[in-house]
Length: 370
Image (cartoon, rainbow, N blue to C red; front, side, top):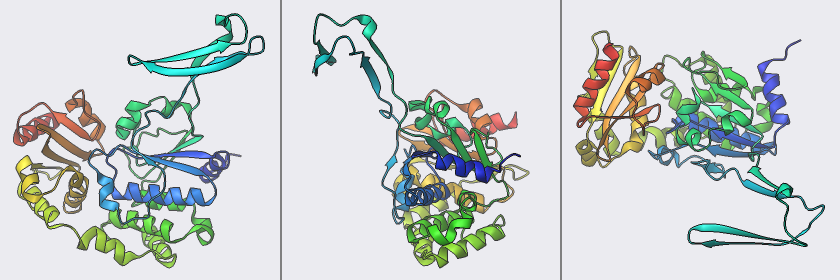
């Protein structure tokens, strides 16, 4: 008799001690909220967690009001040791010294007698310090950006639980929990712990998950809001989540600069004749006049999507560091990226070989028309 995905998930947790939670590059508020909430749950049952995501646009800054887990990293570089091993059953090692000389690290090993036989030492990579990886909203390995680029082996060396609610997910895990009918990733994660709500929910957990659900459903106004999302929101409030604080930080305290940036985005917005392709442009001057930066782009994308339900492909072409880039949001994101990608691009944030944002829009529309 086959076991359910819920049972498989519980079995993997029970056999793990150190868990790595991986998010996409420049994660959304739903992805951040669900990751934080999951981390607090796992730590409550004595599991060690590390949250990893590449955040060049400083998206995390927008959620500073949330309770924050202890271990958040933005790179996996240095997470795997290199080990030199000496067999000492025939010849003991009496001293080991290391020092850096002329940009070289010299390791001196002193044997008890004679010299060290080359057959008695070996070298290689240590195991990763994680037993399990849980990905949230990661449609494919590449969408984690530098996390995958820095350490691709980790995606093949430890088991992966892949959690998402998007049809574009490529089922990268050994266990894939992808619920297309859920309105948020937070909702999917909570469904895995629903029977334990009475025992595990507290303020930190509830505040994080309610934030994720609120963002994903546009404060429950989205037509994709499910009855389950409303039910879970009630559970979170009963557990102490401060809905007013969330709404105040997400909406009522939006800076004048962001509102002005939103205005530029809608002024520059263009739709294809059938309304399926939505593009807009943000110039360096727009950023300067509004005193904003690229960290606001993911929120801006959510606003555009919430106001254009007919859209299937959304693109913000913007100017950053004297280069023209594009943020793409679509179930076909990876396909588009392969068409437009340059050497320093990641899947969702693409660098374009053009000089202006308008030329960037023309290039993308030309590719889409084909």
